[in-house]
Length: 106
Image (cartoon, rainbow, N blue to C red; front, side, top):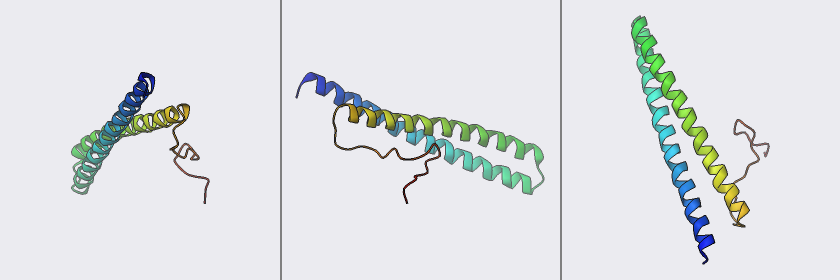
């Protein structure tokens, strides 16, 4: 194995580690968003408008962070896949989805 191939392998590993970290961060923030939405719902049921608004605001912030990490993870996965395509690797990710993740395959 040449040093050039070794460098690509290390790069691929870094992309996958970055993607897995981003996936975990996204999941963490979405989990926190759900928790705070439930707290907001509980407060709303008790007519505690101030707490409901505060919890909703916190939930919204976590949802935004979750979305950012999810986008980062997707971009890292695409970059890793494109790197595989550029270097002749056999495995490729199917990119036949629209911007919302929907496939035109049936």
